[in-house]
Image 1 (tube, rainbow, N blue to C red):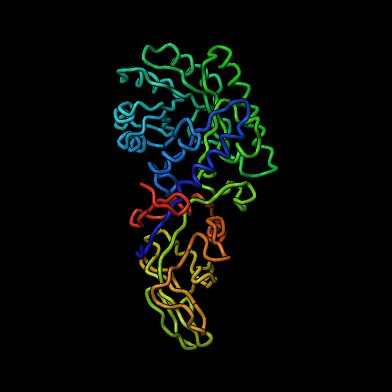
Image 2 (image 1 turned 30 degrees about the vertical axis):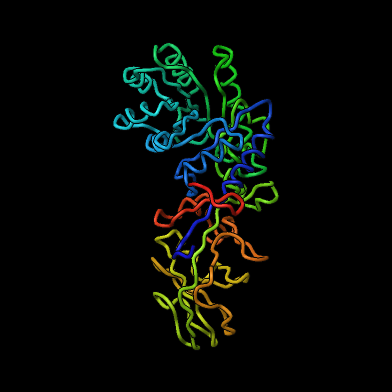
Amino acid sequence: MTVRALASVNLAAVERNCARLAGELHGGAELCVVVKAFGYGHGDVPVARAALAGGARRLAVATAQEAAALRDAGLDAPVLIMGALSADELPLALDTGADLAVWREDFVDALARAAERPVGVHVKLDTGMGRLGTRDRAEATRVVNAVAAAARLQLAGVWTHFATADELGDSFFAEQLDRFRGWAGEVRAAHPEVVVHAANSAATLRDPVSHFDMVRCGIAVYGMDPFLADPDARDLEPALELRSYVAEVKPAAPGESVGYGRSWVADRPTNVAVLPIGYADGVRRGLANRADVLIGGRRYPLTGTISMDNLTVDVGPDAIVTSGQPATLIGRDGDHRILAEEVAGHLATINYEVTCGISQRVPRTYHRDGVPADG
């Protein structure tokens, strides 16, 4: 299918990534797959189905709306809403039957009043991330006790989140792990049924001690490396490819420019290919004059300022590129491959942001190793 922009997702790769992760968990830990942010740009519902087929036992999201989307699609697997919920969002969250995250006693009271049926609750201790959750271990324990005492609340889990698990060799990861392990052990002694969880993808791959009863994997499920290196080194398969096509090829003489601001001016006779994809599709403006595109199995430099709907590529004086050819911005073409990690490196960001930034106007199609699949 030739369209101006297309993201193609291999659900078989997602399944295999999940099977690889689930098969290496320590001590019988379960795999929970994070499908927030539209499945990191891959599509939440198709990825959730593939993850469950690959061995995931639970799903996690950030918002009530994301949980509702999973339920509306017919997914009945256990879901954890990890984010903060306002009073206005709480009814929708409760309607989904998802487990909820708490860390304040006043929210536990509000939740107990609003709940009309049993609600699973996960109490969060902030061991060093500095975002949601209480830093006060005694307060966290009081919240645990309040949840356990409430008639319609069920103490389902205790958890934390690591700030530096993706920074190999740092010492703060071990500090957080120790803080959490001590508190979680105390909770488990009083509530043996509680599910203890802390590890994201980086922690899961880095240290089996962090696996506890469950791990919450996101980026690795999508075949990207949480350490921003090569996914192949961790036996992960990138699931997403982003493509456009060559809409126009035109000559550029020395001194002629392309794009806003004339940020690129030809210094030799050459040809410029125009691709009908731009920053409104998620190809960040910061990639101008520093990234590559694959056309016909060759790398070509992205030249000139990226526009909202178009970008330009210097394809050289030979003019072997022709209108209508596919162009790959993330993915493989012949012997060459552009990873989300490479794109992230050009932008001084992370691979998460690259795929999450692919906009909703880019269609997603799904396949299993080349065989079309339902999305």
